[in-house]
Image 1 (cartoon, protein in one colour):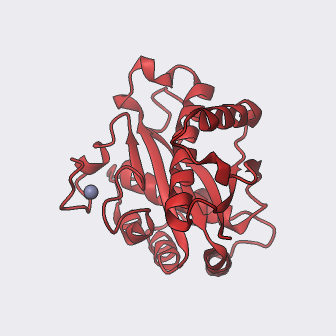
Image 2 (cartoon, rainbow, N blue to C red; image 1 turned 60 degrees about the horizontal axis):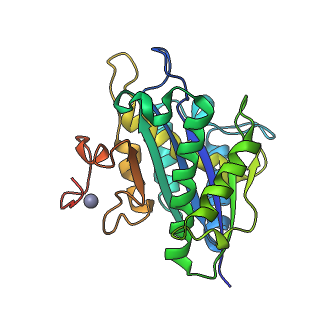
Image 3 (tube, rainbow, N blue to C red; image 1 turned 30 degrees about the horizontal axis):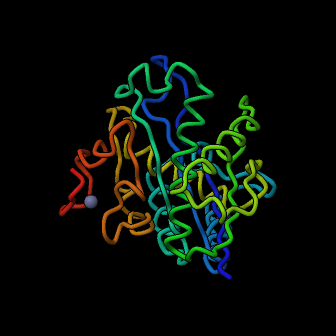
Length: 251
Ligand SMILES: [Zn+2]
């Protein structure tokens, strides 16, 4: 029986003030047994290349700050086989008051549910109806995940379209528990760089995300919206100047 594992990390913050991030999203990395081994090896390699001290969690924010390191991380992660990536993100300025923005916990839950749904669909379409899946969300500081877990379980069981029978162990885990969670953090960073202007000239950098585009679910056909979902409108991502799906039917 097929077994897959999903590791999910968030990118951006849930705040709505001027100082907070323009996007909030999640990156989900899904691996089969081969993918898990390859991804663990890739994380080990990057930890060594970036000289991350033993016992410390490698992160985009702390260890992968330069263009060269980011390019290198994307190149190494793009070689991993047996892995699929799903992205969900919200552009805060495009959200209206009605879409959860006033309540941080609700906003987190909403994005988490979209991500979880993408993961369940990806696992089933990849490995079949009898696949066993273990989903591991990164633990977020100042966020009580218990209500989120209850919300995800309830929403998933409510919808006949969501194959929650695959799930074997929905958990929130600390960042140091699994090497794969560190990879999810870097994938979140690739998305952030493509969408969030930064630096002296306030530029975005889509190169990292495009380097790993082939790892995004369904990108061989069309990654929108099952592999990458923008909110509130899934066509928002197709309007980015770097969007690579030239024959896209989703625009
Ligand atoms: Zn497309």
